[in-house]
Length: 141
Image 1 (cartoon, rainbow, N blue to C red):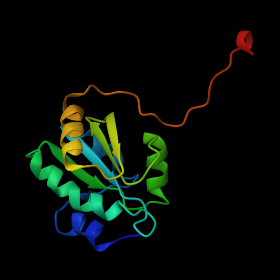
Image 2 (image 1 turned 180 degrees about the vertical axis):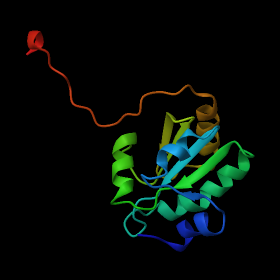
Image 3 (image 1 turned 180 degrees about the horizontal axis):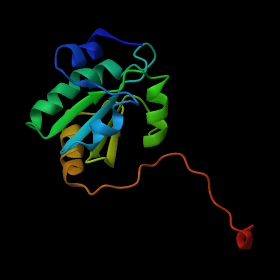
Image 4 (image 1 turned 60 degrees about the vertical axis):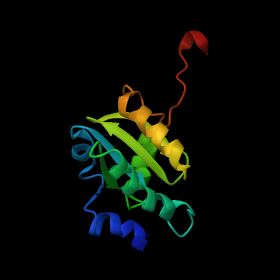
């Protein structure tokens, strides 16, 4: 599903459309890479709001953010969402040099975006909160 405001990010602003085929290469690039997961704009009310905010964030951080858009919500996007373990659309997933740094979900106040992105830019990488199954050993069963 697409929307004119989400398409604009790719068609006019030149953000890369991220799929399973180019994901690893995209997130491995130097600097902070931001994956925008809008979700289905027909059902995710904040999807288009974040589509408007993202270019403003890229501009505010003066070249420190490189944005890509995951438009295939139900195919590649579903697989990548599971990999990054976020719960709510829309989401901005921050990855530096292939390593997960953090996520900002849903629409935020501008000041909160500025604060959170500033912290993510200097944060160390960490494990994505992806889906996990507890491991039980024989002694603990």
